[in-house]
Image 1: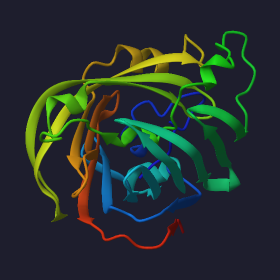
Image 2: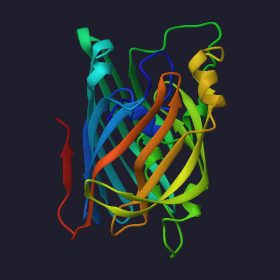
Image 3: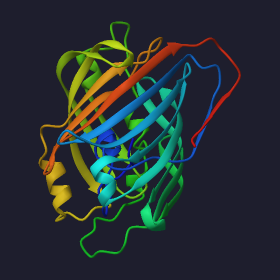
Image 4: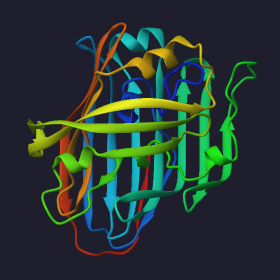
Length: 290
């Protein structure tokens, strides 16, 4: 898996999984008491059919809480140009079908000692404590992040955890009908998704069955420079897709596959392992990344 931002200035974690197609996450996974279900997933990332990275994701779901931790690194051709490895974690609760982040941390360790580190604490969807190193460098055209932009938001990892309301099959068009306000510590943006179709998927190990395919659209709000080519590209993009699969024993769906065209070819993040299982109640779980 790869980072919460693209490896150049202010390029947001636009599509949480594409985030995985270009760098890596970091930190302590937090605690979830009486886990209801557990997901152990592994992903491979390719660009124009060539391997560029791999990663792992562990999620714990309780009745009204969640925690997730991810690790990953670049590989193959991409590693020739930029070696990156890292890990990340988020913890929060569910409010109906909405996620409410409580903490988020992500660290990317690039070659030659360059480190990118973001840590956030949130209460009720509002950022209460934030550390981002390095900070965004000053630019006269950068849209400033206001106090209002730090309220009513979720972190990038939490934005990929989708609990579907109701009593019917959660793998449904309803899973795609959402708009999420995301703040990654530097850039505030909205992610909007729409239903496209249902597909059958099969991991090399674990889940096989239906996945709901959603179109994903990116809208920057603040913290970015409007004339940057990457921002213009993401805003105009209409062909990004995320395929959501269920975590057994819950109404929670998470990405099984993510695909996004890039100037260098199609970028794809694909689950090779997606093992989800219900769990009996047990004491607090603490997952730590390596």
